[in-house]
Image (spheres, rainbow, N blue to C red):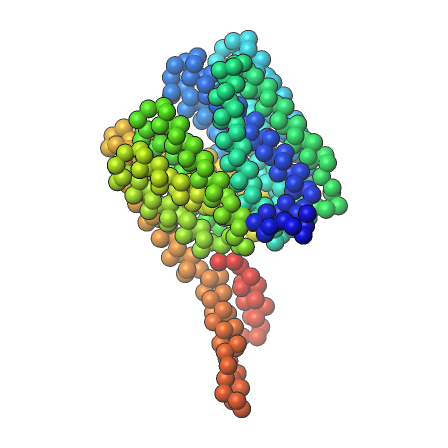
Length: 442
């Protein structure tokens, strides 16, 4: 398999990753089945779209409030054990939700179980991400993250389509039962992973193991802080497409078409990211700029059919943004801080979604969906251009460019008998520091 695997799927050369990706596909499919089932149950019982939004808020609120603390635990404790415990609890809660819906218990019980599931996900997410980054070597992490986005997109398509079919055939409770069983795939994969083939990460030191240390670290690193800030704006105004797609749709059938088109775009974006040898900040900025321009253009196009055409590259760019953002936050941070970086990113994304969804919905009602797309796309484009300017002005970027010019100058041919001796860019005592800075990927 190692000799025939295409470069796009190079992470699959590793047995541990093949196990992990298979289990992740099963788990993501089950999770989306439960998401659709829960939304359907809430809407059917309450008849209120606001109640559906409230249910989504309950599931994401723990991530906003407790994410950094969960990341600190992932940096200190054995992540394999955390994942096993959390996946087991998820399976139990899925079964409890199935029973609650089957017995027609009050909605308060459903909401309470939803909050509990969200609370467990807070601790599961950073540990899951930290463990997944140990399954492949350091140079294969970008490809593994990209293939993970493809797995998530395919699982989303399978989960949503299967849920729609099963609700009509056997009812919503069966979706929760199947989701509970899907967590068994992750548990089995974690138990079957060969520990000797893992690539362990350094744990956080005792003096830098707290939440404040993680926040201080990301604030002191202008590069990471800028990545998180850009991700917040893009998630808030440029990623809540479930709101704008609903407003652009003429009926339920068109909404289904737009959702399917978006899902296809996410798969294509994941494959493109997997084919890239490196996921850099420059690629992230280009994808963000493209998505912003297309989003604004989508608001100017006549009708939902034309909007569906630009939705494919928008979705592909969105996945490329997510994949590159996750890769850079992991590779550009210390290993002992990786869990907290993933947790802070997750908390920021959850907060952006909780803020952006109602904001975009309110704008769609006030000024129309087309004008909202233009306004949001223009705003994210301006923010992306500002971020590009700040990245270009960073000390790491200037040092990397200077050494790139120096390497080209040294490799250029010179007249015979007149060897060129370029002047060093730095004093000798600072040369080690500059060499370390050039390793930063731009």
